[in-house]
Length: 184
Image (tube, rainbow, N blue to C red; front, side):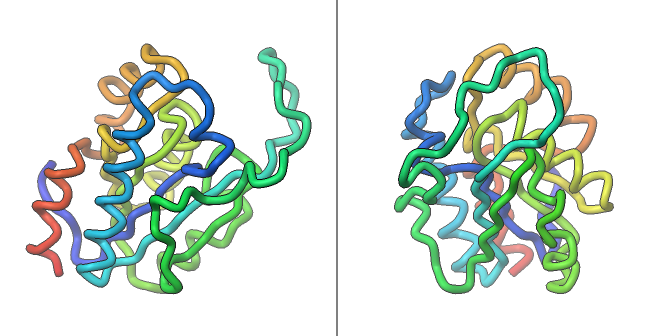
């Protein structure tokens, strides 16, 4: 990692009750703790926090069958560990990426955001798609690799080592937090 822009937003993907209950490659407790630490640090520095949940799926056909046909009660609720605050921007998406059809780009650009730090679940789906979209929209992208996980260890590892360095910079929660005071 090189730096954090003066107006950087944290975007936390799909840390919601239904998803964190699924089996993951990395211990979900550590991922949640790191994402919560990032959210707290961003708030302390007056930087935007975006909390994203998923409440649907893209309509196209896939080879992998979709296992969830509906959402049980509470499935889409953000986890309490994120300590949602009134200033946080909440996005409900219906596709893997947080920018598609949500107004997120306009919201961030309206705040003068030039960089996003992305964390959450799943590394190879919601996190990667959102990071790619942000990169394509002109945002600098940083990926908090210890604040994300996937259902498959090999998918997480591939994204972290092969995909993410091509669309942004990677760092740990602590490395990102350590850079925040320089930009506040």
